[in-house]
Length: 528
Image (cartoon, rainbow, N blue to C red):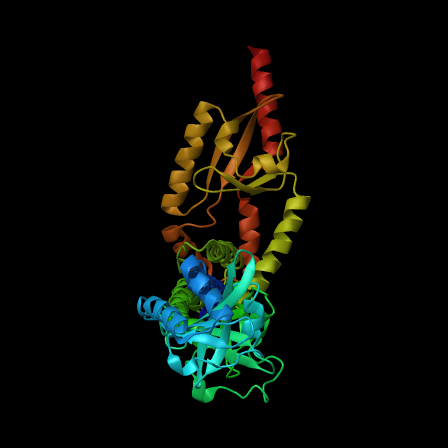
């Protein structure tokens, strides 16, 4: 696989993993925030409806109390109980009708005698009716209380309370209220979307009774066929448990978010709910869609960045490969281009050193560039280096490899006790007096210009004193003269050329000649 392809693939994989993790985290976090918002909204709606219902029921109880507190009406009822007459009955009925007409919500107002007979009503059809067996009558003798009772296929609100005169029960008051106004309040679905609704329920003898028609009545399951999980929020509401349900089933067995509340005054269960799919599912789908588009853009950018970086790295490598191919064909004059990529530049530097060694091998062996391939050059280089090492170890002379700027690149030994790592890379001019520096620089110029070796005498300054060295400078690399040397001597075999190079003693410092000259100078000094 190509490097550029690998880099692009790596970038894409990393981008895909990071995008997936980011998408998963973002969607889950967003979903939690949205769900919390929906729950808070449902809770607010449920509490608002609960307050409306409590206010409505308390208001109707207060209206009945106002009626049963009228002394004149209570006195008339007592008189009727003692001596029933049409006149007294009409008088009571008139007062009841007057109170009923003041409130449109009242369907009828009745007065029930202590023995359970309706003695007067704003609706004459109910006069004389026996309600002895009714719970609202028995409870109405002692307290003000409300009841939801089905009458004429309609749920109505019954409110009962006692008529007490001087601590004695003279009758029971009854108001029957239509729930139209309350239904209007409960069915207000503002902010609840298409599937949101508020349900109000009471517990009947055998099953739950919904006070108002449900939004999806046609889809409602029969309570006989419900599972244990169906309508769970309403079951909890009737038990008096006020809870938030993140995910539960409604009366249709649909997954919903719901809040349950309990209205104690009427023993009413209240639930505000909305389909989970509408509240979160649609928004979640939109989030997934949006994030997917963003993710695709990120992947595309990552792929382009990976491709660009891959090309940036492989381009110099490709060029380097082409150069190496040329070198293997014997073209050693190629200049390896520099690279801004550190690793590639390090490789280039290594190849430059190898190339320099190969060029040196050609000069030492006398082979032409066209005669040697890379394998032959390497072999020849190793051959010459081995012989060169033997020469360095066995000669008494000082041999140095120095560039044209005077930097010491290699040596076999030196007349000073200095660590090798401090000498390599140092300049030879550091060890010369001013006159010798000038001589050496001039010699370098002549050798570079002519390509021929040159001999000079140099004075070196050492910690132990000064010494004179007879030095021979032999060119190993030089653009123009070097070519001339190779061309004139390439007909000779490698061994002959090597012998000549060794005889010329590159950077030789002949100690024997030095000792003779020192003795001559000493003798001259003595004569003087």
